[in-house]
Length: 317
Image (cartoon, rainbow, N blue to C red; front, side, top):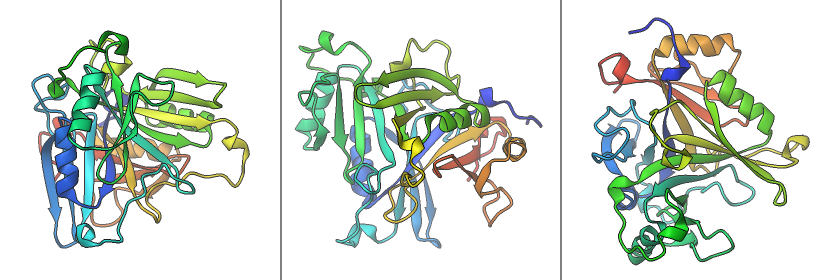
């Protein structure tokens, strides 16, 4: 294994969200075409982790180990929540606890994909026919998290297409809101080593979107075909308000937990971060788990750092 670290080897591995009932959540994400690729059980600590990813022969990370992927979804289930009528998660989209925004899947034929989801009885935050943006939809998962659905093809060309193939879907991006775009872009590029893939400015609406990612596969034609991107949403003026902050998802009410990057050499990567004077939630040396670390980004979101197993040849857990 390398004794140094190269951010070109890093991957935006997964996004973690807490769920009330894992059976219902796994069922939903499997319906969207993801596969359960690993389950970790921690009965002494009374929680389980479910890792889901696109894993068909068409998938970009097909067959890879859990932490040698991008676009993985980690579901965290704390025992007993499924039987608690008062338990509900914070989706990140309601005031005063906004922060995390959504996960996003890219599909082949968006009208057929959305019809299939609707026919299965799942609810929408926004249907294709709602509003002016007819090329995106937002589905609600069993806990009320928003799942954006975008088209890889022009939505105008697929109006009459009735079929959709979930084996072609990808987990395109995770969206979080940020207070200060300049600070966040500097952090994710200079500290975490991501590159700015695309920028979308909506000056009339007062916000910008920034899409960042690691190199990934070289033959991917455009952003909509990527997996494991990070979308930063910046609403103009928030950076000027000293009292403004977003909810990180880990304070009550909880919901979103973290994003995670996998690296080529965990110790070397953490030494590099230390040299950049990052803020830590947990160093490698803290606590009993010596194989994970957590950084804090400028908004206080947690960024997990784990070893990419491809570089060690052994499982992390």
